[in-house]
Image (cartoon, rainbow, N blue to C red; front, side, top):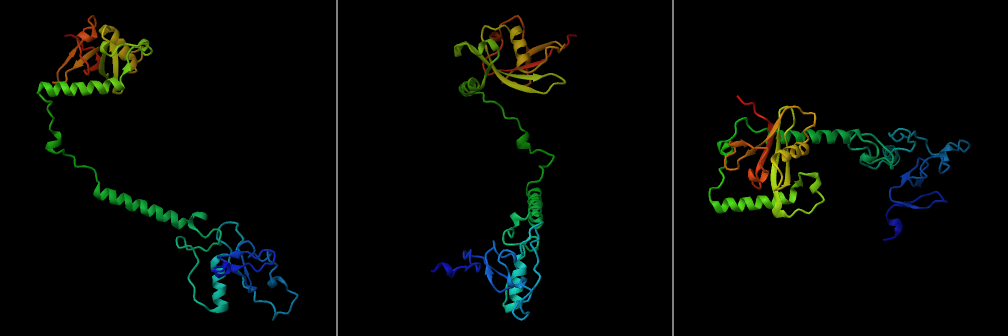
Length: 280
């Protein structure tokens, strides 16, 4: 296929480039988008000195609907061709906002198309309606099967395996409870890995997995856990550590501050930091 088989050459002698979307001027010549303006190709229709029968009829063209763009709109070019040659054609207006733009601004994303924005807004609302219909909030009642508490296994082998896996995960995620141990090399078998939980009225619940030396005293661990969970030093209410039993979540027992922490809790235990209960 020859290059000129698709598109036409610009009639401006100094240009003569092939344009695949040429525009026909009302002087009956074809120009590219850079030379279609009347002042760019010295349009014959601007020459008022010649005989009126030699001048092509001047038809006022609509400009591009985008702001200060002075280029003719594609719709005006097509309308003129229809008037002069009476051949059928389709509309060149934007299908979204129905406004007419030049060849440079014809795409919706190049002229901030209000119709495109409305379409996107409508599509978003339709999507929200579909989500609301098919994924509405769950009913207030919880199915009995979901409410049922899963009982921990009673088989000693299964319990040992679960604790082993849990301990391995905690060793990977645990942080040193004592800042002085961060850079030291403490053997794994000399570490105690526990899950700490802050449950103090007026403070957000926080959880952290920490490890301590097995030789740390519970009172010292209490101070370190308080610092790790963000309890301010100015907090006046006495605190204590409470061991939460894994086999019976409702069973909790306070720890004695004068004993070693490793003598009162085991690896993978959950230790809660709470206000010291008032004695009767």
